[in-house]
Length: 416
Image (cartoon, rainbow, N blue to C red):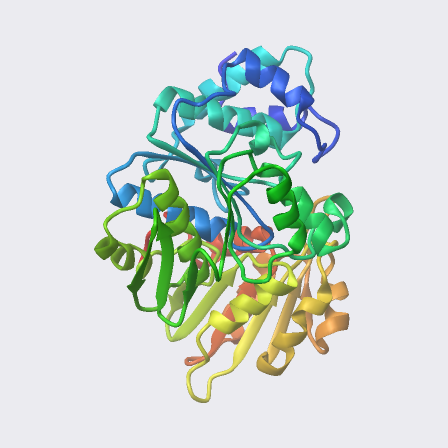
């Protein structure tokens, strides 16, 4: 049967009764049948609570600036599934993905796979046949039992650890950090990208003889400069503002220095200062109104978004369109209250969707809508020249908003 990409997605979603099922045993059986367990190229895996997508985008752009052909896997997508699988900066085409899905479906036999497991294997199948120079893989949830952890990373990255997905990963930073550190491999570097590192990471690295590179020690990004370790030397470069974060840039540079895929030092600033990523403080302008979209959904991510978004024009107001999943903390909205003049809250559909009224209890007076689209349309009507509109709370929120605000937007990682 010749299925379209949409048909394959619907088929994959129907294969497993659960959205998430932790464990690698089932997955490893199918991966072995497909000969996916030992890639011919180096692998960088990226785990963490926040900063994964930005770090992956920086790794990709810098490696390609050095002349290397990359294979990149991320999740979730915003507009199209193809965004998840990229070869040398371009989304995989429908035909390649459908071939990959067909191969995985044939190899799995009666083995049940979740949507994420199935699509991860499909991405690895595409990479095996496209043979890039470097694989950059974003971990979906946790680390130790995530599908991406099937592969032995040459360099493993933990960008940060915060309290998110606590039902699956544990309710303390130490427990979550231990799960994320499950991507480490004996004798291969593990990078930790924020200065406040749970000490359990150091203990696990020492026990397994894993070289640990810590932010603030081996590498750092702050005050318009990044530094990193390259062999026996410490190198640095000064640069302007980095939209995706100086800390994420320093982490990416250190990782590529370890794999030998880093471009010349002079190229680092040129790449990093212009790089943008959809859904990460993404800027759109309609008339005289500035819109900023962000997928952030926990305390740390939302605090970072609020700190990075430019202030409204003099005399301008701030409107906020927010929709969040039911398991995300409404307390994360508290810092926004002094800065938001008008709240437009929306329901999110789906089994994990959260109602607008849940958010209203935290932010005070607000309008509530049954969809993000309706809330965005209302914000468009209410916004005046000089205002700014913040749209945030989930990948689903941004995914619903973008077609309304920019129907022709392509989710390329380099823009402006």
